[in-house]
Image (cartoon, rainbow, N blue to C red; front, side, top):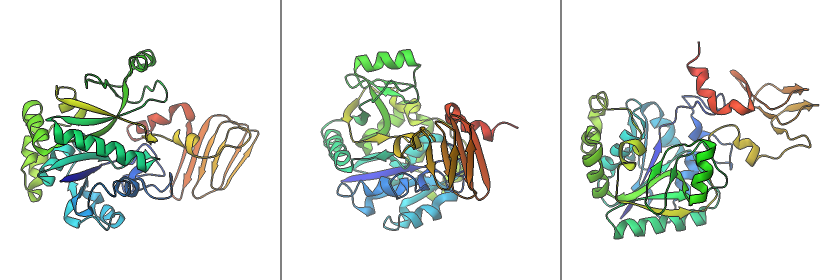
Length: 321
């Protein structure tokens, strides 16, 4: 039996002010009409029954998640009492799902070809059933990205985000992008945590009602660092299904049309003698005159103006005084 666990603990920083801690990226209806979390569940249709879908999110987002995914049993939407990164989220997912072949997927990514996505996941499930291994889906790279981790499809070795020189080297070697999708038998995940991340093992059996006391002492660490980089029994299935992390406002450049001067305009935007800007007006009209390479966003309660080359640094807005 296959069970899918959706990791949905986003904080709303990368697409602020369109996304906020109360309505993070996975709830945005920007790319494809439906919210990203809705798409992440819909494209699994045919691989898993709704009763076997679980969502690990934050305690504050449980109600919104249940509303967005009414077919998922309410008890299957689990709220973490505090953020402890994907290491804890995966361990909790293994604990609540219990048995069978488990697949972990992000709630805030795109897969523009769902048919190919399902075929790839089905191949990963079949491999996980045959082997005592955690199977990861590696994405065929489109360019030498420095914002993604990579995986060697031959050895299963994970490498973290590289500089541009290293990224080019990885492409020559045939490395794939690490999309953060993991499939394996529940017993394989449990053994991996026991061997490499014992501090997270309590989540494999902690009652949901006692999560707060369990979480307070947990390390804040990603599943990649805690487990995957240390594992020897890793298998890779190559995916080519239009995957995109849509990790910043730069994604608007890819999925929205441009005017004759390279501007992206979404909503009431007036652009005069301006080039290469991303203009997203969700409340007040935006008027740009003679500027280049800006991201300007308005919502009913906030305004963002940023250099396009620095939109991956929006988290600084939440730490700078």
